[in-house]
Structures are given as structure tokens and as C-alpha cells.
Image 1: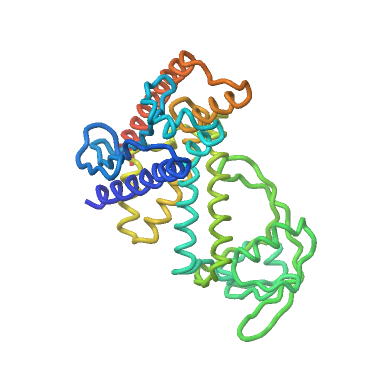
Image 2: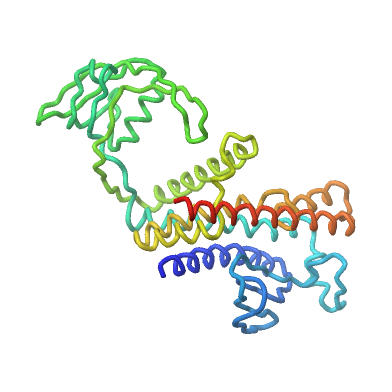
Length: 354
């Protein structure tokens, strides 16, 4: 039951915000909106307000905003020309199309901001749990239970603070001020260069001292401004990782078997429902960024494909021919269908092998 609740909530929120972006921007530029639909196919519920029909449709794998004059070859009543999408400037059309993905990024920022301002941010305490043998920390005499207070006279509040200074040291000596059994102790440690594999299975050089955290956490409350900047940073980080992951899949560094579809999303969403509201919201934020990036890919039928055509129109000063658009959309639909088949296959194989 939690899987059903999870997928309905997750997809519903993601689709609503994406289409809401198109809707608000279209209205702002005076474009008439005929339909605002959550889902595709036969309608389940509908209500018309003004000239817009708001509907809930049967297939919950997307949604759409149907605008007046959306298709270049569409016949339009002369009275509706001021409301026509096609008759707006190319810049306005690009903003209307781009607003969907950007609202997905906005949703992620909003979720992170809400969590950080209400629940705070959770970090590891700067307390040593284990000291690796043969590495600089052991040689300097660090011990389990030591609390790191300062590194090079920089106050340490979280484990990430300390780790960041070690990584940035480039192997230069660091003075650690620690508390051990109510005693303050200072030690000099020279970080050692180490080679490790990152999440993309690529070798990276870093500097370490050979310690791990106890795993104890601390919750830190953030002010409004700090929470906002932290939200932007988290969203940017997810964007960066997602884009790199897509590139690595095409390069073959990451197996395409890791790509998940609706079944996988339902499984994870169900697990997040069981873990609590914050876990579910964080999962929605992650997927929202992924959806925004996916829609910006220059594939016909996706928002990115439309942006590509509008960009070409802005350069050559005339719309791309309808024939080219039709062929491109057919290719785009084919590619998306192949992707859907592939992710469903991955989901099924993952379901039976887990």
C-alpha cells in the first residue's frame, strides 16, 4: 500500500509543479490555456474555470498544458490570435517552454529550504570513531573519542568542516586542536596523498589522515538566508551529479542498468513513505531535479527539443519547417519509447534479482 501512496504522491507533485511552470508563464505572457491535465489519456475528473479545463487523466506518467495556437499549422480564430502561443515572440515562447523544467528546480529548492528552516540540517559530529593503522592520524597520536575543536585555528563544528580542510591542505601540515577526556591537546599532522575511486568509478587524488567518524549526528538550525543559500547549493550539487551521471552512462563508465523507471520509483517512494515525511520530501527533490534536467535534453517532444527549435528560429529569423518538426518529433517519440521499454526491463530485472 505504501508503494501506491508513494508513487501517487511523488508523480503527482512532480507533474503538477512542472506543468504549473508552463501554465503560470503562459498566463503571464497572455497566452490562452485550453487544458491543464495531470496525466494522459481518458479524463477521470475535470472542471472548467474560465476558458481552461482542469483535468485528472487516467495515465499518471506525465501531464500537459494545451495552449491556444500551440501548433504552428493550427487554424486559429482571428479573435484568438492575441492569445496564440505561436504568435508570441520567440523569446516568450522559449521562456514558457523552459519554465516547466525550471519549476522542477524551484520545487527542489523549496523543499530543501522548508526542511532546513523547520527541521535544520543534520551533520556528523567531529568526533573520531576509528583511527587507521599506519596513517598520519595514528602517528600523531589521535585516538577514538577525540573531538576535533579546531584545525589551523579554524573552528570545527561538523565532520565535513574538518574533512574539507584536510582535502584543501594539499599535503601541508595541519595543527589539530582536540579535546580528550576534558583535556585540550594540539597535534601536528601532515595529510597523506591517497588515490580512490569516486561514485563514477574514476580515480581521484585526495589527502587523508586516516580517521572515520563515530556516526553521531548533530542538528543545526539555519536562519532564513543561510537556509536559502544551502538550498541553492544542494540543488546545484544534485544538478552537477545528475549531468555527470548522464554523460558517464553515454561514455560507458556507468552501467545503463542503473537507470530506473516507474517501478523502481514506486519501490523507493514506498520505502521513503515508511521512513517518514522528510525522507519522502528529499526523494521528491532529487527526482524533481532529475526530471528538470531530463526535460532540458535537446530531444524532440521534450522541452529541450522545443527550445532547440526556437533557438534555431531566433538565429535564422524564421520558424523551422513543419516537415522537419514532424520528422523530428517522430524520431523523438521513438527514442522515448525505446527508453521506456529499457527502463521497464531494468525495473523488472531488478525486481526479480533483488
